[in-house]
Length: 443
View 1 (cartoon, rainbow, N blue to C red):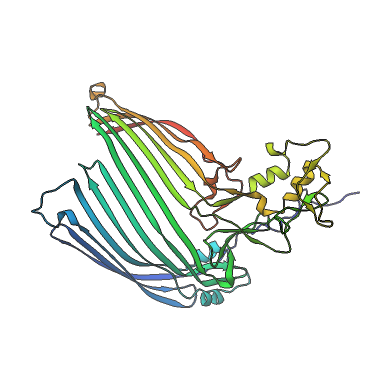
View 2: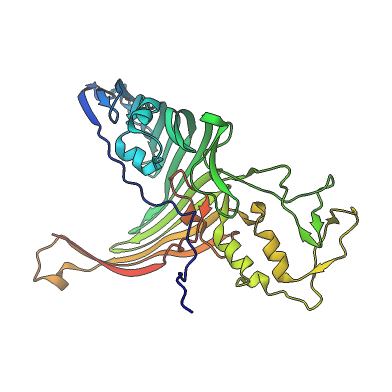
């Protein structure tokens, strides 16, 4: 008997690339002016006018202004002698920018085959716009041995273009506001030695102010967890099913196995954005020799790990090694009797039951990295007398040498990109460690 078939089950979930033909054009006029007053006040202003056609119909005209001003208080009175503070600059700015919904943008979002160009052009009738302002200060003192830089910003983006099921939303609004700060100090500068330390800190508050339908998935769901833009939450909310629990917070079990809370439905399990980010650097120099280190950190936020879910469900992770002959006794209460669980289950059955519970695969995304360690030495020029050069430096550089994190088996940074689908670790390879030698020749 002869049969026909295939050795692979048809994949009905993967979205195939879609070719979309559309046209758009943009005409722009730009102008600007800069001025300086008495060497301590500077002002720059610009304006950009754009007229765009979106796809096959519809048009938009917008004006995008930008203004930036700064004043150095220490230069305001040139007759006053300089003290310990050499520079004290105050600055502020306002800007408005846009992002056109071109055919290429819509193609990246995945235009549905059932939608016509005219329908999409009507829905996406205006460009995304971002309006914001910033204010800050920069201080240098003690012969430039101490310095501070602080900036506050507040931005609002409107008319966001987001995919929503088989259509599009062109009415989303997003707010970003926060503080960026940096500082440096040189505690030692004597006898040919110079030791400097620097630090930076960033804290951003993000909020989705409005979005069509109240929530929009920013990508396909995995393991029952999706990354969403939800009104009232930061961009990149991790949404999925949690554990089913009783009024006292205990797990509710059936036949000794945990249950997903299907009755309550998907809920926000975490936020992918960190509470704050920072860095710390230190360098020591003596003559032509220099050694330096740089640490980076992200604190707060959560991450969904498809790698941990797949490894645990398949039984390949170290955490699944506990396989007692009598089975596992999971703490909780029975869904029928309400009594403490007395049913033991196999390790395999336990992790298979966890596969549909998104809450189980949400981890703390905080991490600290030794981003770079560098040791360099400037060779005396007589050693390379045959080459005319100002300097010749040999450096040994190591990058991403160490990682400290609470998330097991993964590198959280691989899923904390600036894209909208941040917060979902889908089997990305960890950031590679590297050690190399750099030769720098300055002619």
